[in-house]
Length: 465
Image 1 (spheres, rainbow, N blue to C red):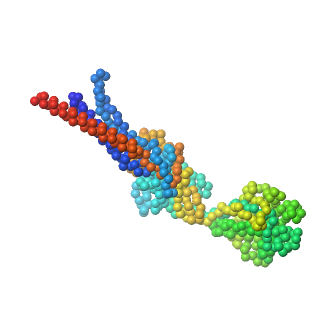
Image 2: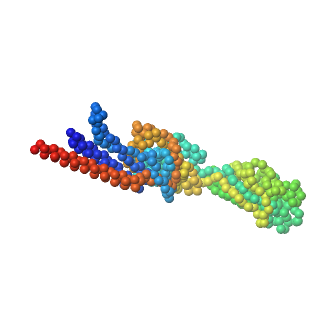
Image 3: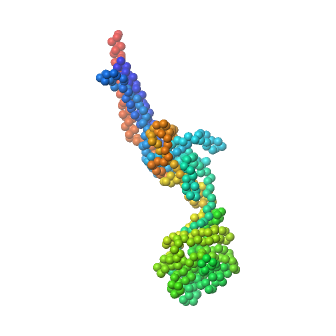
C-alpha cells in the first residue's frame, strides 16, 4: 500500500505548501500596511504508527500559522500630529463601533488591541485609526494633569472647553539701572535724589514711598511718572477671564551715592486707575522695600516672591497676586540708557478657550491646543501587554483579540510611545521572495511524486492484464 500512501502524503504536501503560499501572498500584499504583522508557516511532520521502529516510515506533513506579533516593524516619522507608534512591547486599547445612533457611535464594550497608530480625529471628536478602531485612554484633569481613574475608555474631545484661570502668579525678572534716567532728573537741583534719577517724596501731596500704604493720587500722577521708570506691563486675567492691563513702574527712593543710608532702595508700583483724577488713587506701592548692595545684587527682601494684596485695576479685581522674582531675578547694574531691562514678565492666567486641535506627545499624552493659546493635557494613552503575545487572534484591520493562550491584557508595557510617527509592516520582501521560491519548488516536487506514483499504479494495473 506504499504507493497509495505516497499519493496521500503528496496531496498533504500540496495542501501544506498551498497554506504556506497563502501566508506568503498575504505578507507580500501587506508589505505597506501600517502596523501589519506577518504570518509565517510552521510545518509539522505526521509519523504513522508502527510497532517496530525498523518498520517506521516517513509520514505526511501539515502546516500551522506562526504569528510574528512580537516582531516590530520600522518606525518612521510623520507630519500628522495625532499619529503615534510604539517602540518596544505594548498595544493600544481600541474598540470597534457596532453602529450609530443619531450620528453617535455605539460600542459593544469589547476591547481589542492594536499597534496600528494612524489615528485621526473624526467629526465626533474621537481618535479613529485607518481601520476604523476607536482609541481608548484615561482622561486627565486639565488643571492638575492627574489621571481621572485608571480604566481606559473611548476618548472623545469634541467641543471641549477649558475654563478661565485667574492670574495668581507673575514671573518677573529685570535689571534696574544703577543711575536711572527720568524726565525730572535734568531739571532737579544737583546732589538731590531727583537729580540722581530718583523720587523725592517731599513734593507729593501723599507720601508714595511708604511700603504697604503708599499711593500716588491723580493730582500727582504726572509728577510720579517724571520721577520713576517703566517696569513693563503684563496682561493679567480676572476670575471670569477678562484681560487686565497691569502696568508696573519703579522709583528709586534712596541712593548710596548721595550718602543717604548707604543702601540703594527701590519701590515697585502698579497702576490702579489710569483715569484717576484729584485724590483718586492712580498708583499703589507694592508694599516691599527692594534694597541692593554695592555689587548690584538684591539684599532684601530675601524671599523669592512678594504678594500684591487686593490688586484691582480700573475696577477689575485680581485679588492677591504673587510676584516671583527668584533667587537672582532682580539686579541693579549700571546701564547706558538708564532704563530697566526686562528679562522676564509672564503670568499664569488665561481666558476661557475652545479646543482647536489635538496632538500626541512622546510621553503618550493627548495634548489639546485651545483658542486661548493654552496647550493642556487632555488624556493619557494607555498601553497593555500579554504573556502570550504571539497567541493573540488576528482580526481585520491589524487588531487582535484575547485568547486563552494569550492570557488577559496586562496594564502597562515596557514600550514607549513616539508621537507623529507610524510603525510600518514587519514584512521583509526579500525574505518573502526567498520563501516563495522554496515553496514553489516544494509544491512542484510534490506534484512530481504524484505523477510518479500514478505511473507506478498504471504499471501495476498493466501487470494484472
